[in-house]
Image (cartoon, rainbow, N blue to C red; front, side, top):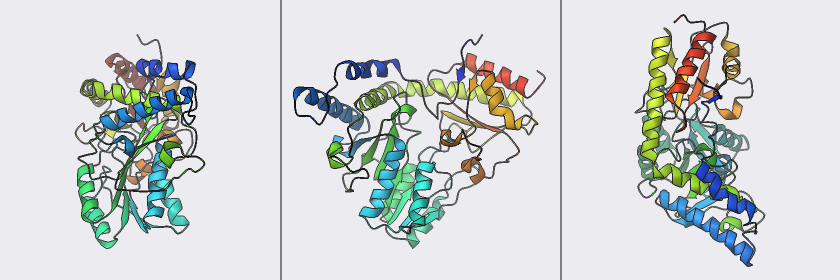
Length: 382
């Protein structure tokens, strides 16, 4: 019997791993020096930050000099996009209508103020990128910035980063990918990818909020997005979030230590829920390819339920039944604005859609409880 709340909103944020808390505690309790100070207290903290940078770089198979710590994925995305456009005189950018707003709103703003022309690459009804259309756009527009996310935060669709990277290399385009949802869940070998910028946010893989990083390929030289100090090797002004940086590096280390095991467990939970949903409801649908383990994030399942009088209250009813899930991106889940991702793939607005997202801490018992409550909410006889 479930006693506590069931948390199935891990695409929004994940609970801290105990090992991460233990790694952060010394930096909170005694190692309080400013990392920019040259005395012993400062040097001790500076060394901890550089060890964290080396850890992240090592896991991604790149150089520590290419890793820059930020406040999270949004800042990292904004830095890569705005600064590369400015630095390289880029006048054209390509993205999709399904991107996270950290990317989409940034590019739309840059178009509005006349910095760039923005093109949206076609997507199919499942939300997959039309690579032929992307190539057409690259052929017609030299010196383009391509910004396409690796894993969609709402429907879980995966991008073929290798193919996109090859196209960008062929046509001389700059390639940025928002990898926030896949960092810590998939291995990113930066020696094998043709990519200029990727990003990470610690709280998506059991690390702390307010800590992220930006990878900048050594071949790319850009100016800072945030000015005011020489921190992060003159790439980001502001005193470092020391606790967050240490926690992020530890979280990524833990994620990589048994990534295959975590994936196997999460996939089993997701697969179980897919089958239970199919057998419990006559008219169940899945948005995007979220029910396809080969084509989607194994951590995300976006479910479209039959139209009902309870549609507007669906998430509320889950909440009062001790189930935490989301109706879309966490960044807009508190508003009445419909999901731009579901709208972008033509999902039926009359059907309530719920994003269930999983972590290594979820269990089959929790899924049984969720299915039981869904049956009660939708008044399905079993």
